[in-house]
Image (tube, rainbow, N blue to C red; front, side):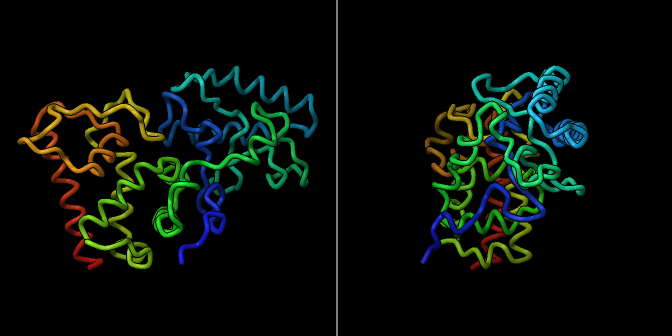
Length: 267
């Protein structure tokens, strides 16, 4: 029987990764790994020397917002200035106001954030609700990097497109044991990594989370046949923009080749 969603923690699942999407971490036109590392590193260093009191924390907030002057991708989605690194190895991102964050001595300062403590405590992303425990285990077992993990776990449509394609190509329900074990896990990771290096992306598109707008295709039908729904969803979530039929077919071939290799490993 599939475990209940509450059996798996997605925000801070382990010491090697975490997700800050709901805090607006990726909601900026400058959201490359290097851009975010520089931003988070500066915030973390500054907050470590910030007194844990109302005045000092508010001063930190005002200074950070002023210095970063971030241009948000979605102006209606707040990007919280209190997201930082939670460990010296910079493997986990999260709320620096959380009672378990370094320097807080179990005191919850999240009431000073834009959304407040109650909103932070009560929010659950779509992936928490939409993905099965098996699907979550595949993501947790194949991604060990906060940046990519946040991109994938925040986009349940992209993850579901992958799992539907696996089931279509393999011809049965997914098995997390097979997919998280090498060498299949490396192919799964390669697919998820397209969130970062997909060559057909419209660079005006923010890849997190999946855009509700249709991707740019040359034709609605290629050679008179609609492409599979899961494939269309995958292309949309990657912000694909195809400038020719040749580019579209090249993208299809890339997908076919990966799943052909995966199919041989998990049959």
